[in-house]
Length: 356
Image (cartoon, rainbow, N blue to C red; front, side, top):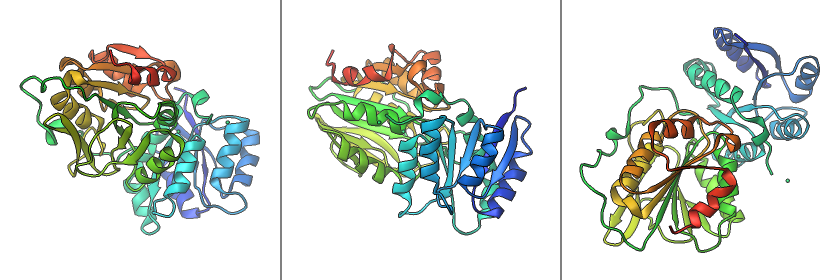
């Protein structure tokens, strides 16, 4: 079995020591080096290039984002960002995602050793996902894993419908679900849409506190309005609502109009927000008035929900393998029979605007 070669880059000796010990337990992972800053890392990489880099953001001599951009320019390599989660740092981490980072592991400023030990499965999962990433899609055009827990389905938030969705209206809804690689993919899609587009509801797997900054960034780039969803926000043409990290988002209907509910709840498919929760609600309350699109991401969140949307009469699409960073979520939806058509990332804006 070919092992995943990992390089750790973090100025904290504690982090390097603990992560090294955690990864050495895994039979499919080999840590080929640990460096206290990017310059030392480059010396090690000159001798042996890693399959995955675990990278801190704040370091001496060169910051992690500068190093990440350098890697993506010279030799694109999957990178997992492991940095402290703070309001102030959210924009910095979004910059890392936009520059091509595959995953984010958030670490606290205190209790670091215990946190890393308790989150070992999350880190290992992120590294394995990164190793499967399609590196040609990691470079930006010039882009959470949730904590491991018992895997619950959408029933814990919204019961499956026993009847048909409500009658058709002139209001159309587009629901999008994505994860690993989705930050870059969503940027490409949303910035290609004209000012008048159908109302869009989105779940992007992303840690709490990042989604507001992510939405604000896209809002500054796109012609349509993009914002983090708030409870009871109307879903209207020319607006894309992104589910806030740490909350589930459901579509609801009042008369001929749609709005979202932002609610607490347990992890579904180990995620909150969950694509399955959103897609199930769209199936129930929009039915054939909707289109569902599942995009790049690891795991199977959204596969069952997309199948429910298709059964309810919605048009359903999956991003193709060639344009995905990770083909996990689309692949599972296709396997389950929830997809009408497989399309390239560049074709998704056309599908959103197509009223047929």
